[in-house]
Length: 494
Image (cartoon, rainbow, N blue to C red; front, side, top):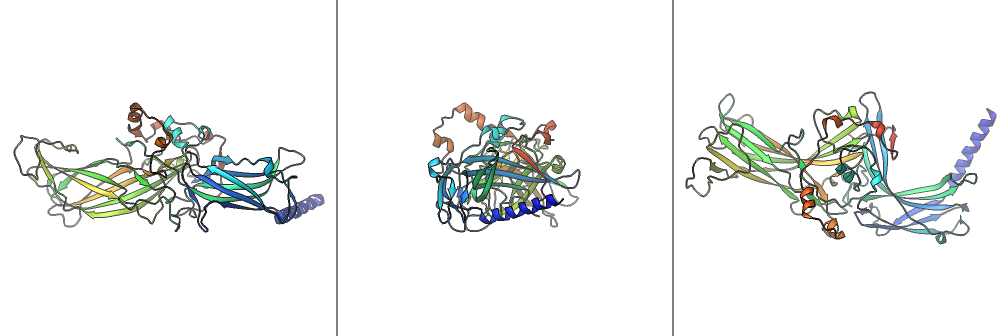
């Protein structure tokens, strides 16, 4: 017992001495604005210097400079109290340092500054072995090897001037750092390396993300791109007809690189196509207001996703080691009462007023109760502008987490005798958020890649995001070596 106490006290004294005399490391980035975190995108060069100073002569063997990207998730366990999670280092680039750049002998002297330059290039894609877990198809591997954006760090979520919310929970974090360390090998075993000092500087990465093919949403449990509803005269009264609303996935919202700020003009537009099939000679209802909301969904898991995650009321995420965090952002409320209905007929072609149309095809198919005759159609164009009070990251899918977006559209209308409650009809459509390259062009165009028409047809064919019925449970024992399990408690943001 005495010997143990002496050894313990001696070790503590040595550790205190080491901490006091450890080298001091500083990392300076080219072009960095004081007080702001530097932001980079695909193809950018991260340049800077690492400066090492010491208070006492310090022997060392190597200075390591690395650019690292990692993700970390924490999931509440449903079966028993507690949390589980994973860490995944998906990117590590090392800066080679020539022997001539080191002092000879390898001793740092007090009163001198030792400077080591570095340069890293943000890659377009990660190495294939980064995603080595079981997958449903090759499309998952492609998505998981794209560089994900910085996510979940409140100190980095901003437009370069203010800290903004990126709508991610504390349970899912993607971070990038420049890390520098002074290393020394053990005299007894050269394979053992000890870090005399470590220092890291955070950087924000928002990669260039191009628009993906539209999602196949037929019979999807979450999205609703077509809805029918009976239009009633009033409470306990007869029906006027049947209302049909439909919408397709709009073009992606394109963000500017680096700051992820949106354009000053309209980002994209969504279109709602309406159809009214009257019971007899009834007129279509008068339209009221249209409300649009954007929902940001962050999926995270303690084990790698085998397929694209999706929302469903029947899927208890916590029971399979997965989590979901939704944040809804109001976009706009606009009056659409001035929208004009167009009259159509499936019987005969009569000459009518220019405001009416006959014998024409409607972009929205008939209701389930339509038997022919007269019907009405209308189209509403909704501008989609992102608010500047939030930070938006592009849509992405990685091994441990994903970020997707959907657009909720709710239309109110008025009928005679409905003075108490205003009826509404609602849709939910998927929408993507992408980021442009610096010159606003395509990455493939910059690289001079030739794409055939067959490849384009295959690329723009709808893709399914709903997993097969027998693939909803992920085996947590299948995590590859680069995924490390953690059970450390972390704070959860309400």
